Figure 1 (cartoon, rainbow over the protein chains, first blue to last red):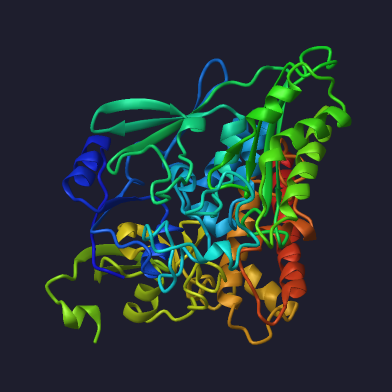
Figure 2: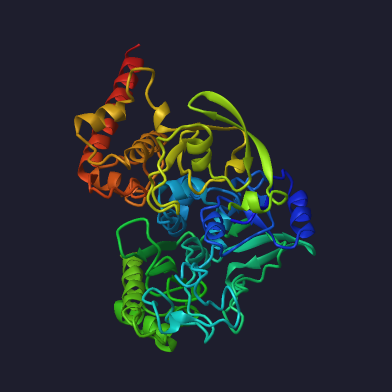
Amino acid sequence: MRPFDYERPRRVEAALAAAEETPGAMYLGGGTNLVDLMRRGVLAPERLVDVTGLPCDRVDVADDGGLTIGAAVRIADLAAHWTVRRRYPALALAALRIGSGQIMNMATVAGNLLQRTRCPYFQDVTKPCNKREPGSGCPAREGEHRNLAIIGYSDACVATHASDLAVALLALDAAVLIEGVGGPRRVPIADLYLPPGDDPRRETVLAPADLITAIEVPAPSPTARSRYRKVTDRASFAFAVVSVAVALDLGEDGRAVRDCRIAFGGIAPRPWRAARAERELRGAEPVEGEFARAARAELASARPLRDNAFKLPLARNLLVRTLIELTE
Amino acid sequence: MTEEELHPDRVRTAAVRLTVNGVPHHVRVDTRATLLDTLRERLGLTGAKKGCDLGECGACTVLLGDRRVYACLALTVALDGAEITTVEGLAAGDEPHPLQRAFVEHEAAQCGYCVPGQLCSAVAVLADVRRGVPSAATADLTAPPRPDAAEIRERMSGNLCRCGCYCCFTAAITDAITDATTDATTDATTEAAR
């Protein structure tokens, strides 16, 4: 690991100033991904600005029931929060499936959103990887890609995004609050992540010193229900092979889909908003045939790689089962 | 040669105060030092083990306050003022921790390498259950958890055992949770009777 300076500011302004001052500075949350990547030599920041001393460690519930989740809130505290458990089941279920008990105690909410892919080639500095070194190539295309993308990837990169929370937050229509050089701004989570394109190094719209300070989750409609389901190779402590978050509102009478938001994890380089499936479902009758039609429409543009075609029916079935569960 | 020997001018250090098993320490550490290396190499506490050094096996699990963490992923420099408990600090003098007693009763060890991490993790599971913290196996998220064996396995999934001693760990932790719940109920009943 390359030597680095470390500091733990108490104020957001001081954190921004420290990050702006040093090119190659990085923000440190729980370190469960960053420390590992530094030890592997994948990342070598000059300076670590620890954000866990900032006043961003609370979950606030507004009068209307909406949430403001501090960026440095630990995953374990988010998962244990009573309002999250009662009113935002998709969010609680996603948080509870993150890592292990130890990881949940260490990892932060914003750190989870900004974690890097677990693509084996990205994590191994002895291999080429366009995400680490643009132009060096992507061995995953022909190599070990069983758990990589089936949709939304580019010629340069077929990695999958590893976040559980981002998937749930997409379905819950959340937004991130960002402090940066140009002042504060609010970015819907649907606009936070960039498609891989020719330069998969850049994964989000964040500038180098930009700091996520909180995540806002609007209050769900009283008739909406939400759920997160994750398929993994072993029962616990594993990244998603495929995951899905659904927020479904059937209104008072339950006869038609009034509104729905759907997102997938584990199938694309960024958390995948299933906008096509949502359009197909709005106004539709909440029955299995309609759910299957919407799932097929969403995944029609999927192009699985040699060894991950199984993800396509898995994603389709997972979405249909989750929708059925929410109507029961 | 180590980085420090090659480039002594580049190495950055910081002074850190740690309380480990109730004993205060002042150490000056390389900012790159993990808590695991500080415990083992600087403080001579070799109970926490370096299994994978990747945050995947759990052999390095220690308690930060009453919560479990992977010491191999925690930077010591980020823990100034922290209270740490390692397996060496679980017993009260000569009196083993109830979980240590339960592990012995259930013969919950084969090679034993992962056991310090399993014990620290299990102590934190008890604290989590007491606080009402749910897990992915909690049936009803809107009620306090009452973990059965399946849920204990889920809560302990961050600690691997190469020997496959999981059934004994689960049995030992189930006993300890039952005892703790019985104690709490007895306390509440005694309190109510007053």
